[in-house]
Amino acid sequence: MHHQGRLVRPFKNLYIHVPFCKHKCGYCDFNAYAGMDRLMPDYVDALERELMRARERFAFDQLETVYLGGGTPSLLPANLAARLLASIRSTFDVAPDAEVTLEANPASTDEARLEAWLQGGVNRLSIGVQGFDPRALAVLERKTDAAQATRAFQLARAMGVGNISVDLIYAVPYQNRESWLDTLRRAIALGPDHVSTYCLSFEEGTLLYRRRAEGRVPEVDPDLQWDQLDAACVEMEAAGFHRYEVSNWSRPGFESRHNQAYWRCRPVYGAGAGAHSYATDGVSASRWWNVAGPKEYIAAVPEPRADGEELAPRKAAAESLMLGLRTVEGMSPPSGFDAELGQLTEAGLIHCLGGHVAPTRRGLDLHNQIALAVL
Image 1 (cartoon, one colour):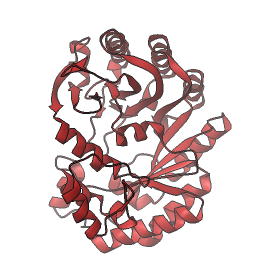
Image 2 (cartoon, rainbow, N blue to C red):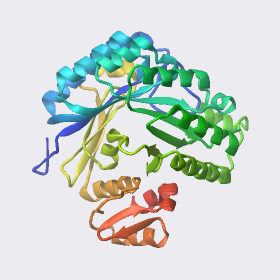
Image 3 (tube, helix red, strand yellow):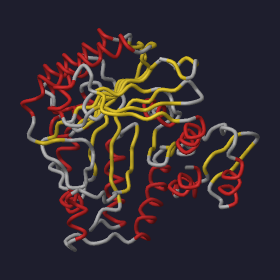
């Protein structure tokens, strides 16, 4: 693949989308579908075919990260998970020290599946805990409770998963500072290596958005949201985690390498229904995505691409700046953004040091203002 005669960089990062869910949560606007489990065998077939075609068509180096996201990848029965993981390894050269992550729901994290994941090379689990407070979980329509989340985490540890991340959601209606602190402390007490804290967003088209519009779910006080973010910063840092990106905390050395590939604008190949791919030659870039529905995806393989866009150098650079400024480490900025960087420095959102820019604490908390200025 070439861009104006320049060679596109080979893919070293693979994302695989597994769109199945037991139940679609009220806040979720991801490409996820409940009640389609019967499609799973055909879906794994289709994924295998897409991956074979991708390897023929694009340049792949040794894979440094593989990420199975969803949906709920942990819903795949153990035999299908084993087959999918084996076919990734037979299709690509996966580095011995590659980070291989699987997103898991506590309810579908059991011994048989864990064994299949571990044997298939999964070495990092991202467990969707979301919270421990029954009232917040009810608003989010999470079908798992605190006991299930704890059990899943402990089972994964006991079976030898050495790198576990936990997802938590704050700014949830009915959640207050105390219940959020309790959630943070209970999550930390499990002993995870990485924690993602996401601010709940009400996305148009979701059940939660509709409920708020109908007045059945209260508005969240913005001051409380900032309070909760502050509380997270204090608790996580006291527990030995460092915030390395807007929403992500890790123990030293446990940063998500796959997510860092996105924030550094490295090429990522996305397979599966609705998955996005990003290719670049270091100057311009292109992005494309697959058809969203699982049935439509299965029917379209081996040509599942729905559409795409070319990013001219200026737009590709703006995106790389916006994403690089999500990370505490920051970046060497692309040229041509002096005015924007000056504005952001004056606003106290970033600091510039010898040809390097990084967000301030305020810039991390208000990253959408950085994004608006840059894009």
